[in-house]
Image (cartoon, rainbow over all chains, first blue to last red; front, side, top):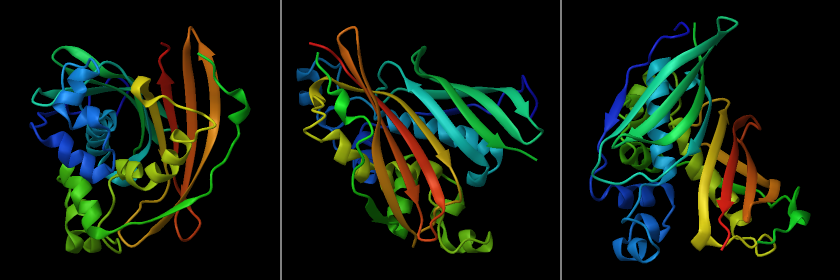
Length: 128
Length: 146
């Protein structure tokens, strides 16, 4: 990995019931993620994705780029906007710097319908 | 809105989470992981691990009960109807595998008020049964003003 290199992009379309499975798997049952009527009542367009699910997609992309879970040293994200089920998420990333030939710093963004739902994401990946 | 600055530095009692093989697999499938290290015991053992490996973001699962203690602390008084998860940072140490017991301690890292909104950051430190730090997390939340 060299500065300027792009990591392999990752695309996934969470299905209609993904938020229910993720709620069970993660333990986060906030109704804005699983109850359509509740979500609309509090002013959302409908049930929204868990931010940490979207962050997990960023983690998958950078972990695959690093060659496995041992390579991922850190991941920092800012959540922006809302992710929705049944629309494709795309994670892209670029190597910004290589520290001591050992740690690649990768800047990533997660977009949906042309908008960044995670931005300023920075991963540190062990290389070499 | 008023925020209680006195809670900065407050630490909550540790929680202990026993990492189960099927929970790791359930989480891995929910987020779309395909690496056999997370799903297949034999593949994980062939790679030198004692059991299936927890994906890095499984930190959410073992740390959340400890973070929840802070999020629901009446002394902080977070209004969940106005809560936005603004940012997240995780730093990882040695891998977590099924069978590990992970203790997590959470503290209030920062509280501030800007332009009518409250900003709350919690820090989590998770250690395994060998007292190795497997993950630290910084959980940043905004409670939007009325």
